[in-house]
Length: 277
Image (tube, rainbow, N blue to C red; front, side, top):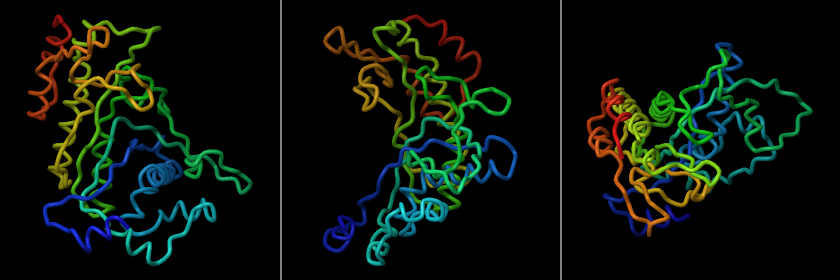
């Protein structure tokens, strides 16, 4: 309704209207057809649930067929207003998971809304190895390929709209039980590696035709996280909460290297590992 009102009375050519989606990438657990289907259903639950109504005016077919009457139905007028009610989209991407097929039982009663994907989301693959290197907090594993997969889906399935990466980064755990010394936080080569590899993957996606318009790392400053509070630090700038919230810039090469969109080499990382605070 808000977009419809805007388009009728206030529309300007230079205005962007859209919404941002928090998306975890999906990779088939194995090579079987069932795991590939599980991956596709997981994308539908994770992304299509919220995206397809504003693209096509309805929920994904897989959700309609599996959730059935538990999904609300849109009236024709609602579908017409929903479809195309944006001219840009934001994507928050941090990590990915393996999607493993779960056999569908006719008597199964879903407990969580994501259960309708009939797929488990696994950190480790069939070989027992995680999808990528752990990045400090419990849920982020570095897998920049997942960002490329996501952008190719946006290009090939959803009409290649203007995209902004609205969040991308890692969090360092800092609690009373496991405190993070400031010296270690400032020597932040792991964040540099993560951001640089994702920027490089972003460039690859743009070269393949993805309509990416901008990138925002999460975050500029250590802040109060909506789920973790002050127990995780995502900032490029360190905030000393015990000293009047004094700010300390981490290695300045982070900003320089993000702009170059190049992957780090071993010499770069060795220099950062050996760097003092």
